[in-house]
Image (cartoon, rainbow, N blue to C red):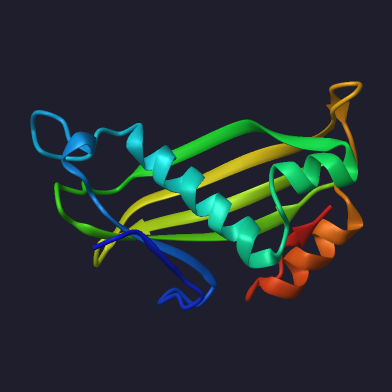
Length: 153
């Protein structure tokens, strides 16, 4: 099964879902997914989320706003283990829009939740490398897309 994305999610709060199959290279000697690979699955799903909201990242975002986003914090809770050849669904949503930050919430499921995660990104002016307000267009696109409205600061 090739990786695929779908606008349909079985989780009511999540509109964005990316489906994938665990590859042999991603498992350890116990034949379970090595923990760091879950962040790769999450990163791939963030790219799908940006596509879904209609933002060309990184090129268009960097050029249009002279900003970039940098990961500030990652919190991962391991509830279970995926194994070789499992089909997974990575659910993603923006949970919070701060002045200069964007907080994503994730659930990775086989049939049951295996991982929950939260990633906080900070929007940065690429000339000064200092936090900068999130572009209003990005905020509007996120609000228009998400099923559950993000908290806002």
